[in-house]
Image (cartoon, rainbow, N blue to C red; front, top):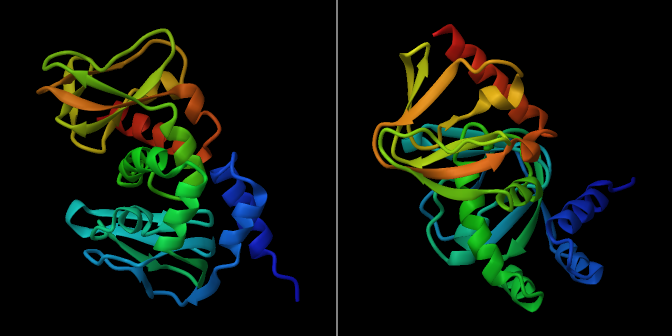
Length: 251
């Protein structure tokens, strides 16, 4: 008869809002808990949603069909947060994959909560970076909102001139393309062209020794860098980096 989802949700929300008084976080937990069956739509692309859904259990998908994005999200994720905060059309569709339990938080209440705790302006800045991470294959799956929020603190925005390599240094950094394109070279031969949401720099992050891959911008390319240390304890990201490295070395 015990309900274990609310205590877990409380811990997720505390990690998401570490400087907010616990009683404020508990106020969000008073929102109605709703259940969705597999295949149900939580937020549909193009709609202006009046409610944000905080996932308590189960798995949902974030789908942007025109960009071929289908990313799975687990407990601690939010559906419709950006569109709810900005009162704009949802960029993608959130659909339940399994049976899903979620807190249904009215957008007005969520915005008031953020403003009352001095978080609204910073979160609006942060949310664009979280939305970018959500749109990538590398970070879009099975990463909670608090984890993506922490990653945004390490992101630096850089511009790579045409013909040059992404920024490098003593500390390995992953470069993720926002716009523009890179070509990846193995032994001087092109093995892949990377466009928006693609990444480079995995070799220095997942292995030691001589570097076999290089990259250069085909045009002026902008994107984000994230240091290797920020990724070291995210198993699914490490696995995808290794998988990508092995594929590129075999090309």
